[in-house]
Image (cartoon, rainbow, N blue to C red):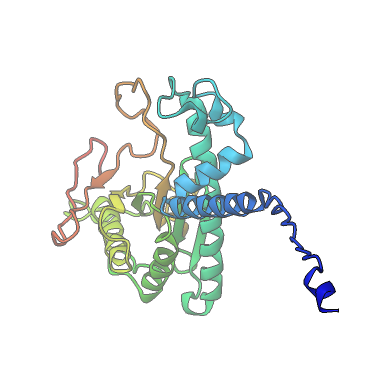
Length: 302
């Protein structure tokens, strides 16, 4: 018995190791998604850092790329042309910027109208007109009724209605970067003969008073680039030169066009266009104090 046990064969079992399965490229897909998300994040941050007009221009390009593509070299987009664009098509660039500004102005105009409507109880019979014209965004404070809603007759001391209105308007204009031109208008009622103070000075003083309120409301620095005293040269109701609606304050945010590659020489303003016969005052830089408007004599001043 013992002899049979010692001769029992030894059986060795060796486990066969299976090869590892191929892991595939799933990690590459996840990594690609991560990189794409990071790229999108940084593009969003880059766009948020731009001013509103540039963001609107980019939005316009993706809506109508053909309008911008004409100004660049070969490629499917301006980005593919690199940093060496060919001769720019001024008309295409102006169209894109104008479209973007029109949308921006229309949005702000609607907001201003809503704010003024909501404050109607404080503004009384004040009449306002907010519109996007072919020159830009125009906001007007128009006298009505007795004609002393915004300024007493013959005075540049504004009422509380004027101040409240301008503060509400300035609050909505803070989101824009467009320059502002403030205009003062009067009716055709003249002062006594040989008076040293005329409608020219009155309209300029009223425009400058409005500028000061806008600056106090946050539109300081270089936002207000010009004030104009137009006296009775641009009557709102030319059929009735003495009507109260001719007395008004206008805020104009003009459209900004890109500089032309071949700018035309400047020429004198044609008769009958805005600005002729107007009294223009240049606003002093911020921090330099309030200066009296510089009245430029005009040949047709009364």
